[in-house]
Length: 322
Image 1 (cartoon, rainbow, N blue to C red):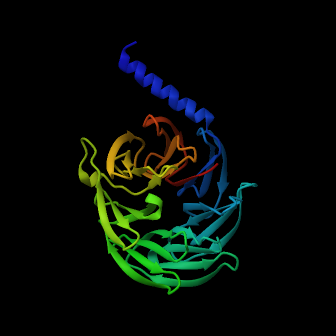
Image 2: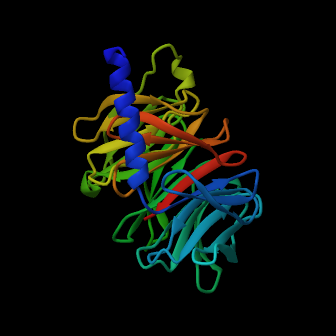
Image 3: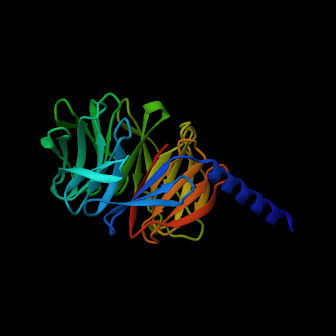
């Protein structure tokens, strides 16, 4: 056996060993199947949960007893009981809801309503709308600050991040970022807001103290045009040192050092890699590939794809319950 082959085999074996030790459940939303598929941490399918139409973004409540899923075609927030594995209720939303976040106390959900160009707030107990704030065209990403005072919302059409004061219920600043901003991650202990720009092949880094753009991370993939590099989903490692970015139609994920903002290793995954999450142990990255209808499990230490599993038609988001 040649030395390069020995190294590849060792990396593969180490990745498989990491999967064998991982625990927890992995939930994947399938837009065309109207289901959530449930896997163990090693990628073995456990169950399928029927939910509302076109399930997309998901979040757990604080105790992880419930999983919320935003359903874009039925205009609902589905409520899934994680113990029984069944959808037990819904909350009516606006027209074509997409991404949401919860208030720190878990009582209010803030949702981007794409076709109405608003961020809308709903009370989860009463299932009633509370207020809405007008945004630019096609709002998507929503992130509520840990103190519950602000919400950040991307406008894909306006190419801005809206800063919304939730107490005043209004936009207090618009931050100009790259073309077609999509999703958020809070990094550097909350001091930085990272924003993926789908049509720029970039991520903007925003200072959360003064809301200025303090840096830009540019992506390139050998042999591919910039137009084919479409970053959307992002996931921060548990130690906060590494950000993984899904490069969309470039069919890769990229590793970024948060402190230096340098792009490191890239991993070939499936077609249109958008949804990402990292296992709480930091060893495995789960990537949903919307055009190949599968999920890739990546060993984060070796930066190797170690397994690919089918996840229904057009998987959107992935989330892990440890």
